[in-house]
Image 1 (cartoon, rainbow, N blue to C red):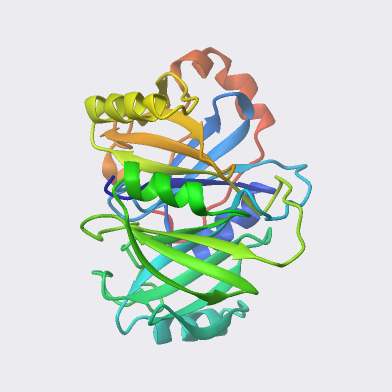
Image 2 (cartoon, rainbow, N blue to C red):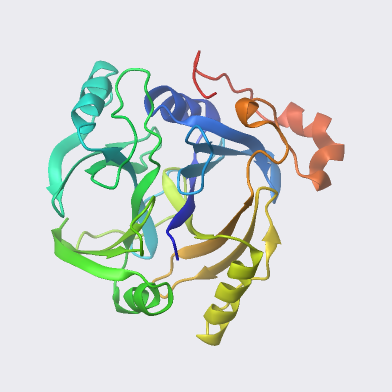
Length: 313
């Protein structure tokens, strides 16, 4: 398993979400489409300039969503990689934009800060040797994509075995963290989005899906054949894996890992330039074929979105 493909979360009204991820975190709006199962709701994709797997954070922005809360059995944080020397520039840029953050602090020898998006989702920026981009400041975005995700689990042992015995991750380090223990696992090659942290915590919390929570975590398959091999391997281990589902820009299979987090394995192709050119990604509302006849009705229902000036391209 080479690492993460994308992470999907839930937000409240879309404009605040767009303003934060494009205007503050300098991500590109890669795709503006709809929730396939609820076409009256957007599905927004953010990523790097090339819309590459391992950089894509997506949201279902439900206008009337109640607040969610992370808890055991959920992914509780997503982290972006910042190249060496870039964290100070980010702290300065966030402070100048009046965006609150915690830190800097150190985790497994890497400097990091954490902040919350408008709905309370925990977002981390971690300075790492694995980062390859230009340190970000002002209007220069970070294109390194993900560093890791954190899974909050009551009992991490079976999830750890899935990561090591089946996915091929290496158990790297463990440390005390947030009133519990954090365990880090690294994919072979240690490229983009290669780290998965398992966190046990004594903090009292009952997780609840809603605005500000992560819905699922998606891993990469290079093509359909590789995805099918994962499907067969998971079913052989007793996991209840869905059939392949066409998600327009990738094919997907889903299953629950032993701790309760919804996992997806998504193919790299066909990619986000399949229905609009790379230099114009995210500019138009794109609908899957089954919803195209309803375009006029869908466009009346969806709230308007204004991109921050000069951003999102």
